[in-house]
Image (cartoon, rainbow, N blue to C red; front, side):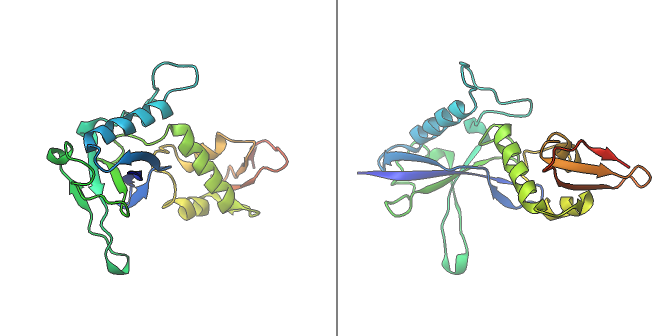
Length: 203
């Protein structure tokens, strides 16, 4: 019997908190399948994600790396009462075992794939996280005109960690979406959604 095995990418953010790196990978596999085979299947999915249309090889970008086994921790989440967890790290010596032997069941088919160190590899190409952050900023700003410093504070814990540029630089990459006004005397900036396609303003 095959089950829907959920593979979830998880990493630490800059605050030391765990964040989900993107869309789950769902594989239809039997519980007797070896974990080492699952790793190869996930690597194939990620390789396809990072391969541009029409290209033969993946493009991991300037700061990206493939998910190599030497950079990988595999964790079996164990949920306890009152929302607590007692995660079990599956050691490399167990990777040759079946999913059933490492603790998965038909009712518990979730594994977390984690980089050994923060940011060692990504779950999606950078464009995925750019679109995610752009959407977050649009929702956060809404109909307001807000000081840039306030906006940075509001989104600092939900900003996708792969975005390495400052929020001010990020906003200026999308002038058709965000209208930024900078006051020359104070250096302070305000931002609102650019619904009328106005150019950036310096006052």
